[in-house]
Every structure is written in structure tokens, then in C-alpha cells.
Image (cartoon, rainbow, N blue to C red):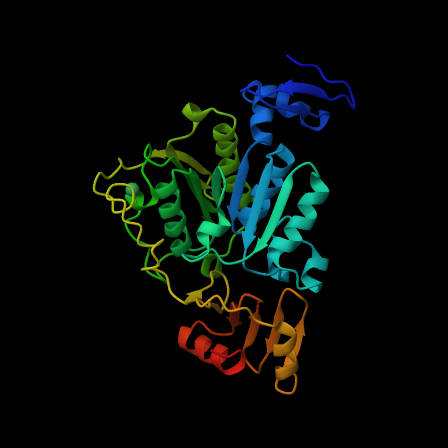
Length: 361
Ligand SMILES: [Zn+2]
């Protein structure tokens, strides 16, 4: 057992004896925990994790991972901070709302203040079939912090194809669900759910709301599994689904269905989400009366030029990360990669036509 004095750092050899790493006092309580120890801490510092989404789950996950000393944490999110996020998205504050900051930018700022030893990358982008290879390149583990099934099936395709584990997590109301996908070893998402649930059939944060504590629970369960795998304790990874209901006082681990040998993804290795055969240009955003428009041609937008063109037509607000275009009953938030969030409608046709009218095809 290692004993640390205040301010003392100890040089440790990594498992392969090729590199040495410092185990600073800040990790002393985690190193004292027998499951991790100094060796586990060295493994964590050599690990790279991507969080897909930086809303409720993502802010909790990111905070825990960065504090734990995971070497590199990439936080990918396409959205910006709004006042109604502050109830549960623990990395954000009122200034982020006033500054219209993208969540990935606001999160990176906070996380770097928490632990300057960790390489934190906030990436303002949309994870889709054409961006996923670039956005997830080089990571050891993916944590699900998204709010929609199209992205989860895409992550699942990517994970199985490249053999990178990922941790599913979802919550709504006071209920949550999480399980680990170890490609080739445990059932993949499509062994568990054949297809995405039809829109409107499941409760969402929009229809049922969500409380902060359930988000913290699910994110903590996800990060605990992440710590196991990143410190080499693969055998300890929970291979069951954990379900919680904080309002109904229920906590259960239930068996996953067996791996489906004929699963289109992990059985037949048909990656239809990665191939772009699934998913669409316009996506309904969970929790908001909004549609996201993706531009697949890779065109870049000059926000300043767009602002000067639209100035006579609409009320504009923005910064170098985004431009908000306020119209009578709609609002368009446009990003430099050509993406836009159209608020005030759930009709993809209306959203696409507003985009074409104000931003251009
Ligand atoms: Zn499968």
C-alpha cells in the first residue's frame, strides 16, 4: 500500500515498464482503493475516452472521468447551452447561457479548470455516418450520452466494426437504464433492440421530464464500468442491464438476452448505420420543439457573410461559434459546418424549407 504525504508525488512504472508516469497526490484516495491502485491510475492516464453528447449524462460523465485522471477525454456535442439545461447539466452556468456557448466549448473550459493534467477536447460537431470515423478516431472507449436511437445504432455499428467497447445509458423521468457492450463478447445494441423505437411511442424528456438525480446515477454507473475496463478489470464488467427507478424505489440488474448469432450488426456484420443507409438529413431533437438539419456536402458557412446578408430580414445574435436567426415563430441556429437547429417546429419539411430560404441549399 502506498502512503502519500501532502504535495508528494511518486514516480511509478507503467505495467509494460516502457513508460513512467507520475501519480500525484490528487488521486491518492482513488489509488488507495484496492481495485485501482497505482497501476490502475497509470492505465487511466494512458486511456482515451469519447463522450458522445454533452447534455445531462455527458456533463456528469465528463466531470467524473476528468477528475479520475483519464488521460484524454473528448466531449462531442452539436448543441448550445440553454437556461432549461441548468437544472441537471452540472458543468454549465448562467454565463454560458448568456454567452450562447456551444456545450462542448463550455464543458472544455470547465473541465480544464478541474484537471489541467487531462487532455480535454471539446468538439462542436454532429456524430453521423460521415463524421463518426473522424470524431471517434483513436479512442479506447465510448460513453453514450446521446438522446436518440439513430446515433446509438450508429455508435453500435462503429463499436462492433472496430472492436471498441461502449456503454449505453438512458434516462427519462426518474428512471434510467444502462448496460455495457463488449463487442464480440456481450450482446450488442441490435441484439437487445432490433430497431429504434418508433417516434412518439416512448416517453422522452420532452413528454415526461427528467430529474437530476437519475442522470447522476446512470452516468455514475456508466463511469464505474468505464473505470473497470480502463484499469484492466474486464472480468468485473457488469454484463447485465441495470435499471433504476428513483421515484418508485426500484433498483434491479436483469439478464441481457443472449447474443443473437444472426444479429445484422454483430452476427452478419452489416453496418447499415455506418454505411449511411439509415439516418436522415433532418433529425428531431429530443426535449425540444426543434429539428436539426445536416448538410452532407461538407460545405462550410461564412457566418459573418450570412449575418450581413440576413441583417435586414431578421433579428440576429451570435458569436464565432454560431448565428441565431430569430424569425416570427421560428428560430434558426446556424453553425459554421452548415448545420442548423430549427426551433419552433417538429416538421422536417418546414425546417428544411426555412433552412433553404434563409441559409440556402
Ligand atoms: Zn448484435
